[in-house]
Structure formats: C-alpha cells, structure tokens
Length: 378
Ligand SMILES: *Cc1c(COP(=O)(O)O)cnc(C)c1O
Image 1 (cartoon, rainbow, N blue to C red):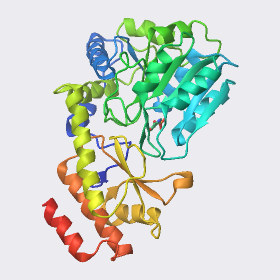
Image 2 (image 1 turned 180 degrees about the horizontal axis):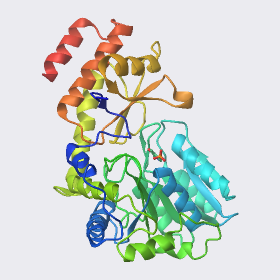
Image 3 (image 1 turned 90 degrees about the vertical axis):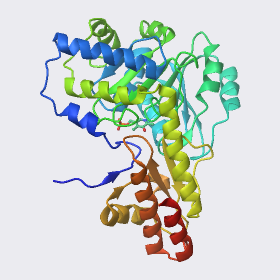
C-alpha cells in the first residue's frame, strides 16, 4: 500500500528516510557486542538531550508505560500526590495514580488556560506531606506549555517531594533541562519528539528519585527500574530489546544533536512561528493561553465543525492532522511540528486547510485573501 499522506499530527510524527533506512537493516541480537556499542552511543546522546548526568533508561512500551513506571517505582499505596491536571494527559496521571491506590489531589485547570505557579506554592504550603507532583511539560490535548522551570524551583526546596514530568511531546523538541531545572523524573516517548515509530519510552530519575525507589512498596515486575539499571550498566536492557528501534533511535538522536539540541529547539520554534503566522492570516486563532512549540492548536470558527474539516483534509488533501478530544471534539484542530517536516509540507498544510475551510464557508476566507496567501507562500 503506498503512503502519500503528509503526517502532521502531534504524534506519531513523520519519520525521516535516514531513520527508515536504519529500521530496514537486518535484525541483530541484543546480547552482542554490536548491540552494546549502539546502546552505549544511544545512552550518551540521550543524556545530552535530557540534559542530565543520570542514566536515561528505556522500556519497550508507549509513553504511558514510562508514566506507569514512574509511579510504581517511586511511590507507595496511600502516598499523597498532587497532579496538575490541564487536559487528557493530566487525567491520565490521575488514573494511573488511582490504579495504584495513591491518595490523589489535583489542581484542575480549565482546558487551554495557563498554569500559575502561585497555585502550586500555595497548595504545597498548605499540604506539607505531598510525596510527588505530577505534570505535563506540554499538554498535547490542548497545546498548553507548563512553567516547568518555575515549578522545579519550588519543588527542589522540599526534601520529601519529587517532581515527575511527562515530557513526551517536549523532551527533544522544546527547552527542558532536567538537572538544572530540578526535574526528578523525566519521561519521553519514541513516536513524538524522538521521531520514530511507537514502541520505546524513556525515563530518567534524579538521585532524589532513586532514593524514593528504595522505599517504594508498589508491586512491580516488568517495570522494575532497579533491574533495568543493572542491565544498563552492562550496556543492555533487562528483557529483550528491540535492537532495530534502538539503532534507529541512535540515528534520530544524531538528527537532534547535529548542531546541538538548542539549535534543534530553534528549528521547531521556527516551524511553529511560520505556521502560526499563516494561520493568523487565514483568520484563525490559537486555542492555548500559552502555546508549546511542539504543536499548534487552533480554534475552529464556531459555525464550523472541526471533525468535518479534519476528515476532508484526510480524504481529499491527503493530510493527517488531529482534532480535539472529549469536550473539545470538533472545536479545535491540532497540528504537530515534530518529525521530519519540510517547508513544502507546511505550505501544503496551510493551503489545504484554507481550501477546506473555504469549501465549508467561502466567506470566512474570501478569494482575494486566499490568493494573497498562496502568493505570499510561493
Ligand atoms: C502521547 C502522549 C502520551 C503517551 O501516549 P502513548 O499513547 O502511551 O504513547 C503521554 N503524555 C503526553 C503529553 C502525550 O502527548
């Protein structure tokens, strides 16, 4: 089956030819010197992207597996924890914590609204027995960026509290400095910022978090990070490794680190700026109060149906973007900026989106404006 779609979702993302070539190489065994060599390279590069001196461990799961791993390794039943809940993925933290009988408190934000760190410091002043604070760096369901650096400053001062950050659409794509910012657990996922197919999740723990793991009383088997750390020290994974995915990760890390990770963050910011300027010129507004550069979330004009726009883009323009979930269904469109996206992909998305909106309402973008936009882009 040929695939001529442009994939511009906030995960999975378009995988580059360099990575696809690597994935097509013959399978190698994961207990060989060749694998150990690749694993060593990957480990060194991951530290640079996470900006940590700690080992970055991996599980063969989607990102949610590493989220679960952080809970089962660092905490115990009845521990009091706080979730900053700003959307679908904030809700996922609550569900995972409840599944393991933690006592869960949450600060629930209106979807799309920015988080004010004062709410965190106030909460922690009044609740001194919180063991962990959970958050997203980028809440992919709304496009909101969270003030991780400022939150880290507050939590760093507390001896008995760790800061657990789901950075699945953030680490590798936007500024995030694990050690410097006081992040105690940082989590990444392969099909988002790391530009691979789904199947690997990444997790790094600060020294403070490693000391928490010694107290943890939640039963665990597959997600036991002590086993994983032992294997890591022998340049392996504890269970079988998908050597193919790991060697392709080695290549996408080269792409991210080519001119230093900071340059890569800039590249994604430039994509976000380019697309957002174009969306504004079409008369569209951004949904989040503070936007993360990994994706743009735009409001669908209230008289139009985002589901139908998304569907028509897929069927007639061969472009895949995402709509909203739950209460945002039909009301927003989400366009990813991670992955192997070219300028011409972005131009195609802008023109196609304008065409599809005009199909449903040709007054929203009149002909003169439409022609001007196409001229400006070419
Ligand atoms: C994609 C994503 C996840 C994990 O989803 P999986 O389907 O398990 O990979 C978690 N958090 C955020 C913010 C995400 O964008």
